[in-house]
Length: 76
Image (tube, rainbow, N blue to C red; front, top):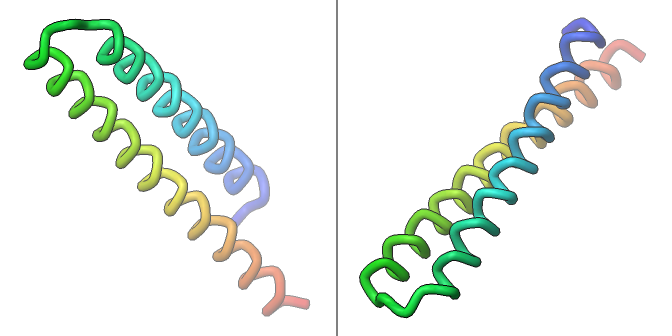
């Protein structure tokens, strides 16, 4: 994989992970600020989804980093 492409993919994934974390924080904070139990459950559900999205992205980033490591160790 070309080094520039790998760096771009890593940057995209890292940015997406940060945005998922921001979204999690937004939903979680909103959930803690509401007195409505139904709205709180809804917002906490959205927060959980953001956590799952972030984990999926971290997994993809790890695969990309491992793939690069394997490619570079094979060519050495």
